[in-house]
Length: 321
Image 1 (cartoon, rainbow, N blue to C red):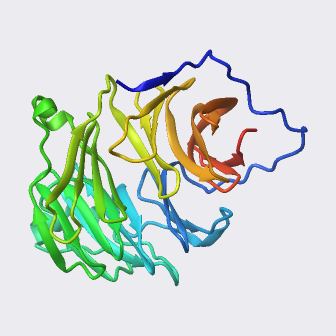
Image 2 (cartoon, helix red, strand yellow):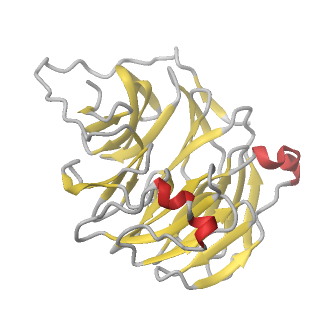
């Protein structure tokens, strides 16, 4: 059974900061998430907008829409970003790699996408290094060294950064939660030293061998809520953000997790100076020596870069402000 820290037990708020003017700088579109990398971070919008920013949130180039569909996931590799675009209305799904340097371009229109089935054509995201059509709905992507591991409704795959297949395997199965079927989706693919961790919304955990996709370790978390997001630090371990408004933390995935209650759902978490920080539904939080401290937020925090929080209205704000 997981350990639990009560929201009412010994919790203090984030220390009040001296009031000062904070300029609200907008990115020009409502964001879905931030795909974080060593050399750049990618802000992905609800209508397929993409914007590269540096470690301070400063734009690199301009906003572009390389493909006329929402970008449902993305991963930064060393010199490129790999994304997946899904349009359920037209039944189109594309995976492509874009270079992290140079200008990103606007791509085809939705009218062109609509005509693809009748024309027999194949639209590529603009400026892509390579592009592939997926024949099953994507779930989650992750990095393992220089390679990419991704899951779809039909299987699990590893490809190199040029999209050459290394292996393919069936999706992991956990008998304890197998009755959930399509309602239990893969929520995290994360490379770790010596393996790749796959996590499902219902708490299924498997560690696979990156050389061939075989299972090294498997378990099911004892949770009553579904996992909405996961953050990982090689030094500090795992933070799992629960749909209903709590956090699970654990140093190693094989160990027993600790539950931290929060004022609302968390949407992104990062490690700063050895402490977990997160943002989400109308609050920011810091976990210090196992104790959560909170500050209220007017909006909804979507992602954190450095001391900045990106909110769902497309504006940057100060963390904890």
